[in-house]
Amino acid sequence: MIRSIRWMSASVAATLLSAAAAPAQIPANMRKLEPAPARTVADTGTSEFFVNGLHVILRRNTANDVVAANVYLLGGAQQLTPATQGIESLLLASSERGTAHYPGAELRDKEARLGASIEIDPSADWTRVGFTTVRSAFDSTWALLADRLGAPTLDSSQVEIVRTAMLSGVTRAETEPDELLVNLADSLEFAGQPYGLAESGTPATLRRITRAQLAQYERTQMVTSRMLLVVVGNTDRATVESAVQRTLGKLPRGGYVWKAPSPPATSSRALVTRTMALPTNYILGYYGGPPASSPDYEALRVATAVLAGRFFTEIRSQRNLSYAVDAPFVDNAFATGGLYVTTVDPNTTLQLMREGITRLQQETIDPDGLERLVQQFITEYFLKNETNSDQASFLARFAIYDGDYRAADRFIDKLRKVTPADVQRVARTYMHDLRFVYLGDPSKLSTALISQF
Image (cartoon, rainbow, N blue to C red; front, side, top):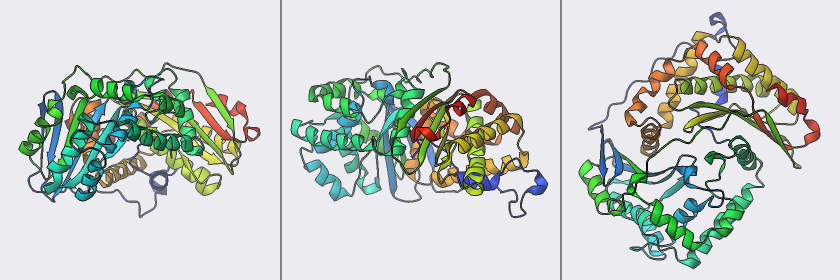
């Protein structure tokens, strides 16, 4: 599915903000939602400290015994070149096959005994390496994670096992329409820019990366200045600080400094088509948005939700032209918005999408409907951030993009300050010059429609 982050489904957005309804047309059961009551938990607080350059954020929560610990290796796609796409993912996956203190299968056996699962999640701006465990198993599980980052053995035969598995995954992705669609759209929209590179690698790069390259990458890139650790749960600073000091804190500090990549240069409309025998046609178009530090960022987030709701109503519910339609918002260091649909009638569907954008650009949406939409955003935000691991990622996002994890506390206020005029302005400013990828039957697509976007 589309690589987007939004705290609302298109169906909910459609219900809350259908078209630009006047207040009198709003159903009686859609009264203004009250803010969700704040939850109070015992001994909750957030602290921040450094261990040999490794940035640590700890949010203590004693409501239960669960602890989530995520290490964010900063840089993401910026650490790659066209020839090394997938190198970090291959290194981290290979680390599961043995480390200095847990050779061979011993590491996997230890994980199984602890009931631990260390997750590797590569993305555009960082790679997350993390786990969720209970308080009593934190030190033991942390030791496994730290050894995987700082002391993988990289046995040649084991690396080949991992390489084969990863090659199977990326090769299979090239036959999955949604994954192929996103990969092609990224390459088109972000040509010559890090976001256009594949964090998980390509078949060609995964075949060429050598064990020596993996070892060199581990020596040069696993430095504390490139790491952000966020821990959320029932533990204290002394425990976390001690664990870091005796493990990752001993790694070289390095001189890494996070810097957001430059956004793509302004480009003209484009269309890439690939003929495929599919039961429906897949369409994804991207347009560039503002940096995460811009006041327009949250306004565009809301505007895409408005558009997604209207698409759901018009294209899916009323016209039955698609089962899957969206206006994705890709939440990176700079935003990317888009249009996505699967449909057997691409021309009619694209025309309706064009009309939806034009309407958003020319008309002012109903303030009451917008307020309800934003309130639902907030409600779903709280639901999406219930787990400790989700809370850790939310804190990390603001620590990285805004330079201060406390900016997370201002997220709600930023959403509430978005006005109908803001929605109209960002629609005019950013929703143009889309670059499309089309998979399916090209004979069913009028390319003249693309020039309207």
